[in-house]
Amino acid sequence: MSIDVVTFGCRLNSYESEVMKREAEAAGLKDAILINTCAVTNEAVRQARQAVRKARRDNPNARIIVTGCAAQTESATFSEMEEVDLVLGNTEKLERKSYQQVATFGIDDSEKVRVNDIMSVEETAGHLIDGLEGRARAFVQVQNGCDHRCTFCIIPYGRGNSRSVPMGVVIDQIRRLTENGYNEIVLTGVDITSYGSDLPGTPKLGALTAKILKMVPDLKRLRLSSIDSIEADDELMRVIADDERLMPHFHLSLQAGDDMILKRMKRRHLRADTIAFCEEVRRLRPDVVFGADIIAGFPTETEEMFQNSLRIVDECGLTHLHVFPFSPRPGTPAARMPQLPRQVVKERGARLRAKGEEVLKKHLAGEVGKILPVLVEKEGLGRTETFTQTEITGGEAGEILMVKIIGHSDRHLLGDVVSRAA
Image (cartoon, rainbow, N blue to C red; front, side):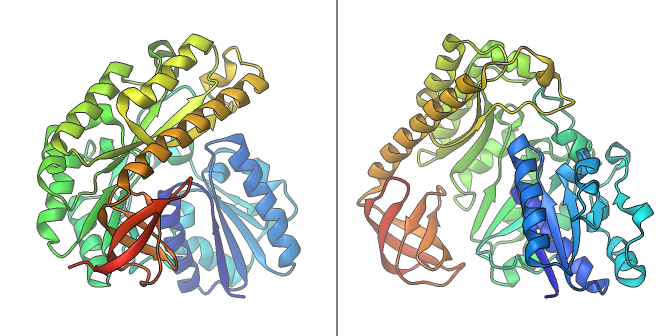
């Protein structure tokens, strides 16, 4: 065994895992398992601890290094595990010197934790990579951190304040990946709609998106990861309307559909803002599909408030739901609010997931009979432009095929390959 990376959480973590592996290998590190954790929920931290124990059972002689957001926010949780050799913070995990010290001198028990003050980090480096191992699409980090302090969220304490990657660096990275054969690029970060607020001239996400599409004409598909719709700027809306290479799928950081709960979450939008955004984007791009993150059972949520979250699914025409039963994270204001019984939280989460299954099936049924371009992800599966999973036969990972949709299962489309895309 050389270096194995286990990744939890978001697309940004996936991108950073590729950088971590490259830097660790360049440092000469061998026989190591890097576990890149997520801190969004208590369950995410539990899964990371479980992965650590499994890694030690399966690889008794390997060095186990834990990093990522959970390592940043609760380093003691992992440093106290006897299976763990080293805990690295979110800044340290991307630095070659962190792994050089391990490769050269081993791990000193007195330095088992190497985690800095993430709030002191003022820049985000644009790490150039040639691709992402085993992935048909490539993620490109454009931003890191978050300046907002939603009451339920621990992530700013794991990622720090918002920092943007300079536009030229982003474009160079995308050009490099496109030349290496990637047909689809996903812009990723913690809060990508805050892009540019710390850069000279304060360019916004719309300017970045327009520049990428202009400067990399060979790029076939550009996709945005989760966005905060209240921050969508006018130029981004123009790109949505005018350039079909920007994929018509937007995943919204919605969180709730009730105004009082949104206020208690310290969100910056109201339900009417989200509905208006979806209506405007649908007017500009009729083929658009929306996904959203929604939290079920937030503290103080009444049944009436929860019903507002259920109703906004239809009012916005949402299709892909990521449902999170509320998980109180220590150190956040929401953890100190009056909590709902766990059974109520679980039950509301189940009802939201059922609603998600209902609207997804409706969307799938509406695609039957169409001929759609599908990016092959792996053998037998691909994604349409609206990020709808599609079962197909044939094609290589990363290739775009024209596919006739002949039916659907409960969760994905069924298609026959017609031809390769032009």
